[in-house]
Length: 232
Image 1 (tube, rainbow, N blue to C red):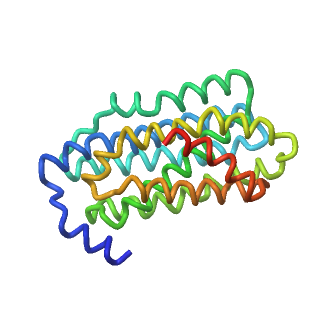
Image 2 (spheres, helix red, strand yellow):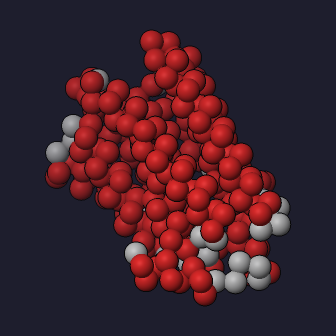
Image 3 (spheres, helix red, strand yellow):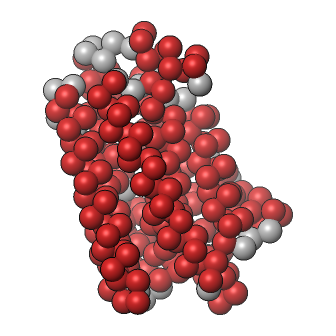
């Protein structure tokens, strides 16, 4: 970790190359928080017994978005939000389709597991190489994301038996999208000193642990994870 932290001192945060890449990475985290904000509001409608908690989570995501917008302004970078909307379009469409069908389990897998684990992995890899302002913002955000992941884990664990088949199908449909997204952003991430292999490794650890916490056995987690790796 210390070695990575030292690396941040060698990055030219004001170079045009860095700012160009940052315009897309920053947009992705802004859009990701906006997607999460909207997804939790929809989940609150699908899970009225958890409405208060889900609205609280949605408000936290909205605050995170403002924090990341400030990170862009700090570097005088305009986020490429159109790129980010297209980046999330696959997961966005799948969430909307599942929500319209009342598929709470699929919605929770997409938002509370896949998107939260994706965010945690990205933030973990970014923090050691971030500029000082963005590091402080991101360290605060990542603590919150673990609590968001926890909501999905707890609900799905309580409903594991009746949710298992839908979880497996939702994983098969959505996990390959994560690898497509990682490949799409790999070059920009590398300019920010974030290696694709490190992002994949951290995501797999977070996602595997979440699946284990819900109730899947180790051999099942390996099989579920393989759906993503096959598309990597």
